[in-house]
Structures are given as C-alpha cells and as structure tokens.
Length: 261
Length: 294
Image (spheres, rainbow over the protein chains, first blue to last red):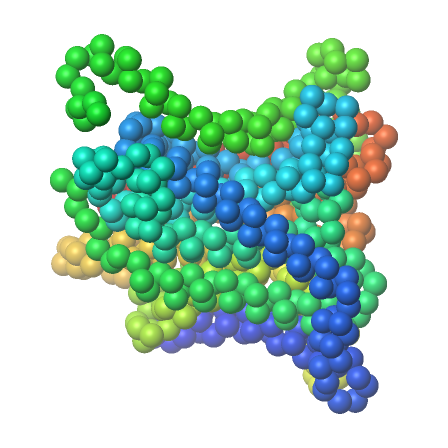
C-alpha cells in the first residue's frame, strides 16, 4: 500500500516534469508545416545575434568564474585558518544574494554607479561590463562560497599551511600550489553553477543594457514562434551539461573528510 | 614566522589587524556590490528628490494598482511555495521512505539539480510550448479528448499559469533541500515508536512531523522568496500583461512608469522587506531544526 502511494507520487511528479520538456522539444521541431524538422535550430544557430550574445555571455561567465575564484578561495581559506569565529557571519553574508532580489541589487547599481556618481561605471562599455561581472559574481556568491568552503572542510588547512610555511612558502605559493589544487573539484563545481547562472541571467543584463544571451532569448520570445522553443531546448541542454560536469568532477572529490583533531 | 598559538593577549591584539586584512578584498566587494547598492535603495525609499527624510514614498505605495501588484505577487509566491513543498515532499518521501528501488534516487537528485536551475526565460518558452494556446497539452486535450482549457478558464498568462510554471523550479528545490532532512529521520525513532505501540499515522504526527516541521516551514519561506523575486520567467511568459511587483519594478527601472523615481525605490524596498521576512523565518527555523538532524 505504502509502495503504491510512493509510485503514484513519483509518477505524478514525472508527468509534470516530462510534459514541458516534451512540449518544448516537439514544438521546436514543428517549424516546417506537416513534418518534423530541425529548421528552427538551424535558424537560431545561424542567427548572428545568437552567436554574438552567446559568445558575450560565455566570456562574461569565464571572467566571472575567474574573479569568483580569486575572491572566494583566499577568503574562505583565510577565514578557516585565522578567523574561524567570523565564519557564520561570512556565510550569512554570502547567502544574502538569495534574500535580496537581483532586480533590487541591479537597481542599486544603476543608482550608485551612474554617470553622475563618484564611480561612473555605467559611463563606458568597459565599466558597464565590469559592473555586470560584479553583479554576476554577487549572484553566484552563495553557490561559489558554499562549494569552496565545503571543499576546504575535507582538507586539514592549518597543518598544510604550517608544513608549507616551514618549507619556506609564502602566502601566494600556499594558496596557488597547496590550497587551490586541493579544492579544485569544489571550485569546479562552483564554476559550473556560475556558468549556468550567467548564461541564463536576464534581469541584470537587460537593465544594464548589455547584449547578453538572456535578453536575446527574451527578445526572440516576444517576436518569434518556433525559435524560442529551440532556444529552450538548447538552454536546457546547457544546464544539463553544467550539472553533469559537476557530477563528473565530484567523483574525483576526496570522500571522507580528514579529521583535523 | 610567529607562533601559531599566541600565549599573551598582547600578541593577539597586535596580530588582529593583519588577520582582518585577509578578508579585506571580500569586505570591499560585498560593501561595494551588495551592501551599498541595497542601502542606497533603502535610503532612497525614505528620501524626497531634495534628499530630505520623508515617509511619503512608502505612503505612495498605497495605490490600488501597487497594492494589487504586491497582493498578486504574494499570492503566486505563496501558492507556488505551498504546492512546491507539498509535491516536493511527497516525491522525496516516496523515494527515501516509500520503498522504491535504490537506483531511482541518484537520477532524481541530479534531475532536481538541473530543473531547479532551469528557470528564467527558457522555462517560460517550455511552458508556452506546452500549455500555451497552441501548446502540446492544450492541443492534445482539445483535439483528442475534447477538453478546451481556455473555455475552462485556464490561461497561462494568469495566476494559475504562473504558479504552475514556477512549480517547475520550486518542486526540485524542495526535493533537494528536504531529502537530507528525511534521511536524518533515524530508523530507531520509528522502531521506538512502534515498540511503544504507535501506528504509522501516530509516528508521523507525534514524532516525524514535529522534527521535520522547522525545516518544512523554513523551506517554504525559501521557496516563497525564490518565486517572489523571479523576474525573467514572468516577463518572458506574460510580457507586461500581468501586474506583479517584479514586472512593475522592471518597467519602472526601464522607463519610470510610475512617474516618480523615489516611488520606485519604495517599491524595491517593499520587495526587500517581503523576502527579508520570509528568509528571516527560514534562517531562524533552520538553526532550530539542525539541532535535531545532527
């Protein structure tokens, strides 16, 4: 009896999740009347706007990941090593981007960094790109910090640091050659979540007027019928790819945490 | 260099500033790109164009159109959070406790990770292609079974349409959060309860549910905030035809549709207050529930 309800719950859930995926796939193949074809995909992939915005977003994602790693790894390491009492507060701060809606944060950016402010980032293309990158970093902070901090938990930070120091290593050497390689798997899973977030992000890019993939998808959705469904399939495949990569790299993660005491 | 365990308090004092320097880049980053922008909006909500303190902006929110935008937003968020919790819990319970084969678990959690991240614009497209006027399910029901969704009053660009769409990322998020909590229910508790003569229902009502309650209510709060702040899905789905807070704020930032920038700050401030309350509940209950699930 119990098992019957369990199967029923699972089946109900699966129907709900499969139907939209089926719907968008079927719809994306219907561009040519009467037969299934990949016309919508061909149309999307050949669109120079698609290539431009997609490249822009991928580059932005890579820069965001690089910045996120440079910001989060030293911070999380330092807090574990020297300021453990600060950890709950830092963790709380990193969760704030889940509390404050992205639209409010970017509204603050526009107000704070406009052309007549003390730091006129939105005045130049480079400045706006940088501002958008900082915004993306803020959005991915909860995931990045959590991943790296969990990774640091599995290694004995203070012993590794003392060992490296007694061999004459400086802070930069310790971070880049001892800590980073040890938490690489965690960093990578944070990076793939960041990639998925940045590629699909709409609000910040749209309000900062940058030619990113999210606003492009929205614009296409407002004007076309079949191409958006093809885009949705592509976006789903990308998300799936990012999550699959996380699964794959986390196979290589150290399993049991080393007991530091 | 220095000793790792300082003995005198004087050493601690002299080392402190240097230690704090290590988190300076992080502090600078969150100050510039998280705290200051948010504070700026909050302060702006209490200022008039001349920069003087005023409550007029907050009072200005009290118009039928803005109140109804908040109301619909809160209703959609609450409905999608409640349904997401219910369905997500059922699925997670089915997999962890319902005696389903073990191999289902891992693909389900992977899929939940994907689906909870599959939000925004593409999600709206997927639902338009499924439940939209010429979507897969709509057409199938109309031509094969003879049920016309539209004549039944269902419209994707409405309260229920948005709720059904949001559930696509709400349910997986619930599954991801609640599965570890369900795993934390110890088998001994159930055995102890049944030795003492409790039925399955009594075990759930008197043991499992009270233990899970904080994490259930907490997840509810998180799901609520999650859909309250969702902009992209709503805009891609409805354009600007549905009057909800994120869409209104988006239009306000783009083109000052309210005709008063400071009213925009008040609108954004209201969003912070609503998600802030939801998440304060979440954090508080989370801390309470973690005591039991060690």
